[in-house]
Image (cartoon, rainbow, N blue to C red; front, side, top):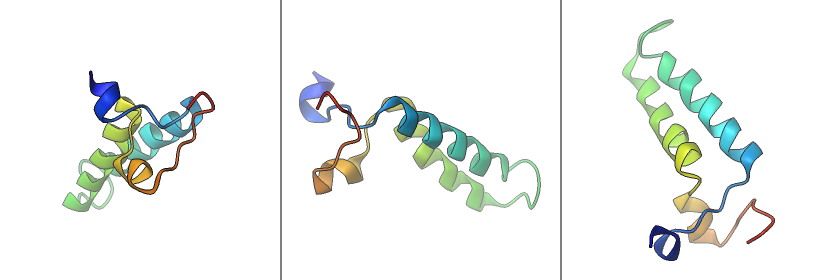
Length: 67
């Protein structure tokens, strides 16, 4: 059902990159400058784990080959 509303639009490499970047940014909350700006990392982390990017959908872009 969720695929009808928001289909997957990220390939595996895109998803892995987003998860890695999200974890790096999120680590800024706990180590380094310890700033809450690291919470921005939740966005790429969530989109990478879900495989759905709302911005991609908005502009009609996808990195998946089967879409």
